Every structure is written in structure tokens, then in C-alpha cells.
Amino acid sequence: MQTIRSRFLTIICGVSLTLSMVFGALAVILVDHDETIIAARTLNGQAAHVYTTLNPIFIQSEDIVHYIGNTIEHEVKDPQELRDKAYRDRLEDKIRRSFYNAISGIDGVQGYYLHYNEDISGTPDGFWYARRNSRYDFTIQPITPVKAYGEKAVNRTNWYYRPLRTKQAQWLEPYINGNNGVRMITYVMPIFVKGQFVAVAGVDIDFNVLCDVVGAMKAYQDGYGFLFKDGQTVYFHPDGKGIEPDFNPDFMILQNGDLLQRSATEQKLIHYEYKGIPMALAFTTFRNGMKLAITAPADDLPGPGHYNRRRPGFDHPSCEGGRPHRPSFAGYQRSCPPPGPRGIRPASDLYRSR
Image (tube, rainbow, N blue to C red):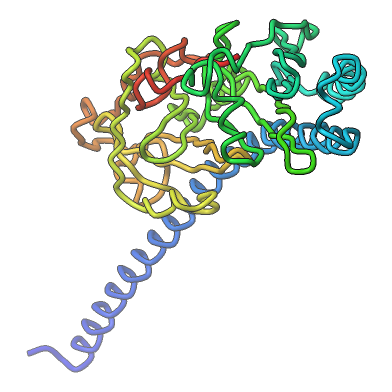
């Protein structure tokens, strides 16, 4: 028969062991929680850093186009004055200088233009300047006769007729320029004087510049950046290079998919599966509505909720001998897809401009 003392010692040992297990489990949970926060902060921080590098290009482009538009609205007292070629030339000289002085120092800007309403000018008139990249100066380009092509020739005149229809300045989605084959995005503004449409002014941003920066993004061991609009449209992805136009990345959202409706993930992560590999993603949104994402295999990230963490003997279908694979990409590229691929929309959706 056990003595009272031995029973008491047994109870004390049992309680101590139970408390040790509880506090040990709690410590693991707290550490894992901290690691999860660190992973979220790391990816969101990288997205925010690139955002601060690229987003000023969009903001400055908008400001310049609005400045040009406001200048024309102020200078032109009567839309009928634009029927005079000499008057248009004098106005163009002033606008051209202002445009060049404002735009030439912005990396990523590929071109700028002013195109008069051909019903007023009677002929295609205005200017369009473009350059190969920021190391080259702008050179004059042929003006597209939009009236001759008509509104139905979306592949050539959407940059003109779309803002005219909506009567507001706007960003156009990435498209391929029909003259130089450069993939770009455009901010364009319709200009009205006394309620009458007189011209459009716009700035083109070289999409390759954005892709170069985003394509160079790295996170943890196998993370990378890409550009998308929503769950249906991907503009740039490392796997898009060298793949047929119908590039359809199959993203299966696992957790926090509602964050896609926001402008940024902030301190959270979206979990999804791509090519059978669990991934974690953070994003922020540029001024033009395009989302900048940085993602990494969940195995690379610490903390719970990141599914399969790297640890000895861990067994998972994407591992061999407990060692995780690198995702099987078609080839990590730091340049844009060639004309054609633009995410999961078919190539027929791409239009050629000017």
C-alpha cells in the first residue's frame, strides 16, 4: 500500500509533466505564430518595395497627360480655331516641348502623343514620339489615320476611340503596338473644349521595363514575382515565356482568396496551389489597377499554415526522400513574353495600336 507521501509525489509529478507538455505546446504555437507573421511581413515587404519603385511611373504619367490636356483646354478658346493648320502647328510646338521636358527623365516611358480630332483638323494631325529604351532619345513616328481605319479596327484605334467613348482619362490594359511590336500600357485622356472633343493625349509605358523588374524579384529559395489583374487575367508570369498564347495558369485558391478583392494583402498571405505545389502569395496594386504579386512555395516559408515545412524526414508527394522539389517552371525569365502570351486570355484579345 502506497503511503500518503508517495501518492502525493505521484500527483505532483503528474501535474508537473502535464504543465510541461502544455507550456511546451504553447511555446511551439507562439514560435510558429511568430514565424508565420515574419513570412507574411517578408513577402508583403518585398512587394511594397518594388511598388515604391514602379508606381511613380504611373503617377507621373497621369500627371503629365493631365497637364497637357489642361494646357490645351486653356489655350484653345474655340474648337474651330483648330481647323487652321498654322494655329495647330503653333499649339503643337508648345505642347511638344512641354511633353518632352516632362517625360524624358522618366525611366520606362516608351512614347507620348497628341492626336487631333480628324473631324476638326480634316486630316490626321498631331505627333507621336517613341524610343527604344531610356538610353535612346525620342524620335518622331508616323501618325495613324484613325478615321480611315474606323472604330471597328480595335487593333489599331482603340487608344483613340475608347477614351472618346467613355469621355474620361484611363489606363489601357497591356497591348502590342502595331508599328514597333513593343508591348506597352497607355494612359490616355480625351480633351474637350466647350464640350466638343478636340484631341487625345497619351503616354506609353514599355511593359518590358515592368517585366524586367518584376522578373528579377526573388523570395526565399524559389519565390518569384508576377503581374496579374484578378483570378482570370495574368499579364506576366515566368512560365509565360516560350509557351503558346493560350497560357492558362491553374491557380487553386486554398485560403484567404477574399483578399483578392482588396488593393493589397498587407500583413496577410493568400495560399493557393499551382502545378500541385502549395504556394503563398502577397500582392499590392499599382495606380493603373494591375496587381504586383510575389509568391513562394509554402515549403520555403516557416510557420504553421504553410503546409509542408522543410524538416528532416518530411514526407510529401512533392518530395523525394523527404526533400522538397523546386517547382517545375518552364524556365525563369527576366523579360516579357513575346507578342502573343498575356496571361490566360487568348491572343485574339490583344490589340495592336497606332
